[in-house]
Amino acid sequence: MKKRNLLILAACVAFCLGRVGFAQAKTHHVVFAVTSGDEADWKMTLGNIRNLITALKPDATEVEVVAYAQGLSLVKRDSTVASEIAALQEKQVRFVACENSMRMQHVEAKDLLTGVQPVPSGVVEVVTRQEQGWSYIKGGR
Image (cartoon, rainbow, N blue to C red; front, side, top):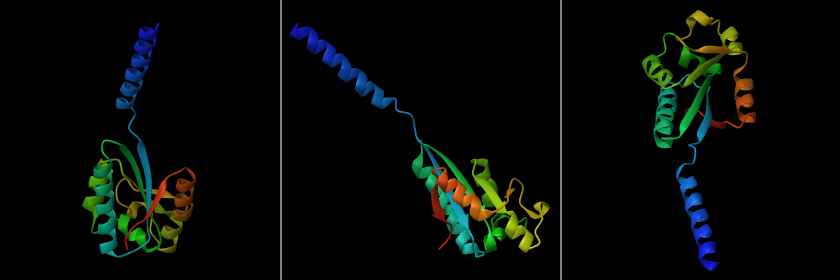
């Protein structure tokens, strides 16, 4: 009887150890808020996003960048970091622009980089993501 119990215990331990090895990778959800019109802040933010995605591999990352106030310039067609944004979009990083800021600055959807989606309010977008459990990062310094 003791030998049978040891076999059952060994089977349970082996099963449990095997299950640990097959754990599902976590998906990280991160929202960056960019309110600065300073190119140095943009470059820092985009670098942080690249580093984040690389460091969390093999885990999946879902990243959204919310541009509002002076940060709206980050996602305009004449942005000095347009090619870096395009490269991150290819990695499924989502960029959104605040419609309130767009209205205040007389910016239309056609003035935004390809793939940038307007949202009614940048602040509400950040709050909503946080309420959904996303981690918040302030873009820039």
